[in-house]
Length: 130
Figure 1 (spheres, rainbow, N blue to C red):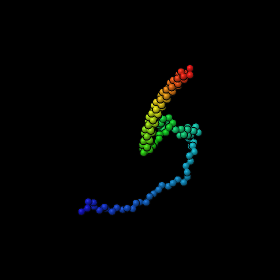
Figure 2: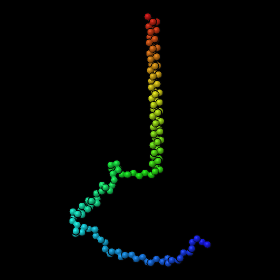
Figure 3: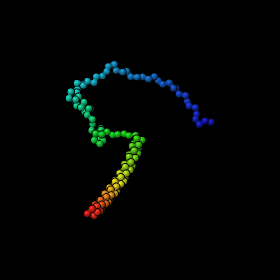
């Protein structure tokens, strides 16, 4: 025994569609005699000016920007990578700066040692040839 019984057969024919008569002439959009030319100008100006209430302000003149979530995530990931690389470059520059300072100290010590040796040689030379 089935759960659903047989459907009653309904008449599947629809009555024919009836369309209204279309007008024979095209309406004119010229100002009617009830409107003055000043009224028409006011209406045109009101329509042509954007309403301040209708358009919300977004950061001055900028319009809202819509971005796909995937692209936003890609940009965030790229920014994270850039920050990491920037920190690495900063660390490398610090190390290079420290190495350069150490190198400068070493060169200054060598310079002073050479000056001492030069002074001692001059002293020996004076003692020998006097």
